Length: 292
Ligand code: PXG
Image 1: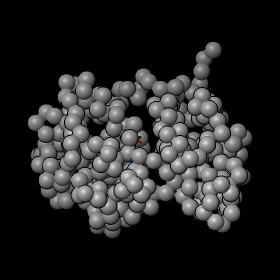
Image 2: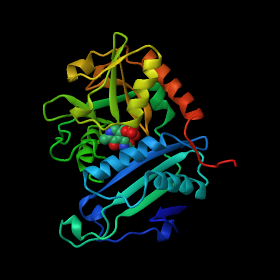
Image 3: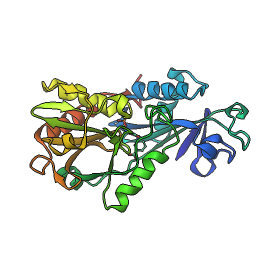
């Protein structure tokens, strides 16, 4: 595997950054998780835009243009012969002193890793997932804004640990007002009476790229989406529920806090969305191997 760091490619063994990097010392940095399908990088522009927005929010100057970063991402896929895979883009604050001050950090590190992906088992998509609400509250937007895809993911990891120790794969996180925000690495949707609902971005949900794609695709089926405050009561009484994320794609949810959702099987609109999503990934994205 060849890993991109600041314009150069390194073998996996030699792909290293400083132990004084504030990305490591303080989680001071931003990242993206991107997918490649059928020789194309899916929603590349949207991911790069979000990375720049995250960086701007933490006053981190990415030393490249949007286009240069897109080109570097494609080049990393090409170098690793990736046709279907997962790309991790990381920008850290760079090496500094042991103090917090980000001004003491010299150069941001731009890292791109392109690898194959470990998927959830297909049986899970067929049967649907059982999830639980956890006690860890989603970060308040005035603390670490959940819109920032930062390297500081302890909020999500603490929630994931709670779900895992209770014997579940995923956790529903509520915001500090008690409304549903999102899961640890996925956005959440419900369907009730042929209408779709998902927590507003202001609830503490990430501006998920799969979230937006799902709203668009379900819209094409003639189903509109609203973004109200959602409580657990709304989830329990939904006809269908599913999660969305780049890695997990569309995951049907069939039980929440031991309440069966709908008839306890993946819902019909969810299944239509899964199909539409798969179709879209077949035909869209930035080509990795350009034919000139
Ligand atoms: N919410 C959070 C908190 C996320 O980290 C999503 C929603 C979905 O967004 P996209 O744009 O991918 O549709 C994410 C996605 C994982 C994992 O292993 C997921 C994410 C990052 C790292 C790992 O599931 N981000």
